[in-house]
Image 1: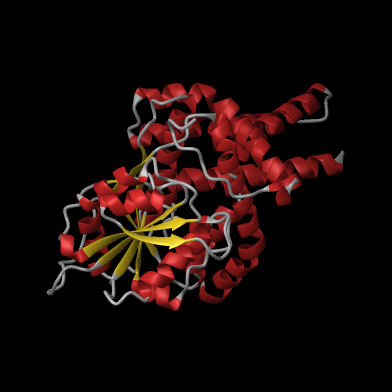
Image 2 (image 1 turned 120 degrees about the horizontal axis):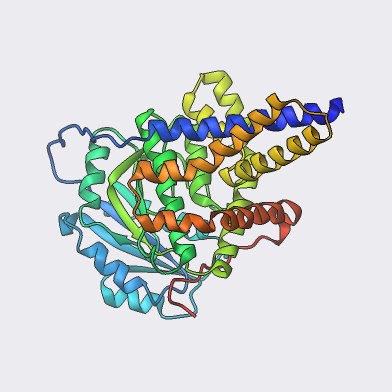
Length: 402
């Protein structure tokens, strides 16, 4: 019985610590007005806008056109598309629309990071000597003021900037609505809170901007990773480089509308996350110890603590086990009360989080499917743990594709 009680106590501590971390970020994530230093004298920064694309002929034209319409001097940015091992007309469509196209049909395939790394190396060698490289997804619909907003952060000393990624089709399906709710919470607790606390934002794979000097000193870290963006962000944290969050630099993307299309994507994300734990937990702990780095400590906690789906399910299981033990006369009411409190706090988190972000009513309605969403994510987590070698990169099916 002592072993069971010890295990339940340990589980309670982990759940309480995870929920406390999330609520702390939620409280700290209140948006603040951005304060920028005055732009320096001289010409505007020159940007290379980079888009990795694999069989994206259906969306690439709209993305390139939207980027070309940004309210930034047209002679100070160029749109580059890498058509990575494409079997469709992505290269031709992008070129006709006005992008500078790079065809990549050699080298390793099966990772977005391969294409990003390959294109970055070409852009750093480009005689136009770009000051910064901005990376977007192939279906991004970028706000007109994106580069103007990001350039102010770079002029103020930022070396890496993450813009705000938003879901553009929350009404497409129940799953898209859940993805929108999830992204709202992520922007609040993963990026806005960390910006307010002076910590590094999480790189999101889209709307990422890097000073060329950073990429020259630290070549793209995520080439081999299933989650190349997060990999790069954690690596930069170990090097003492802060990722700034620009909440007013907005890029809108499309969420998948079907659970079946989302499963390969989430398998890749979770597989990448477990790989990051294996590779970075010890390294981050070392940085925390040697440099007393709060940023490294935050990344360590983010990797080590369970995600919300596991915390929520764990709190329910803990309450059920405690209740069964109480029925058998082996558990005090104090333990039951504590477990019930954890379950209540976990149940309230998504609602409190959406309220804090000013979410519309549709986002709350989407939470009706929240328990299914949590169980689905837990199943993916278990599948990745049990069959890690079965995880492969598969192009995510865009909304509207058959």
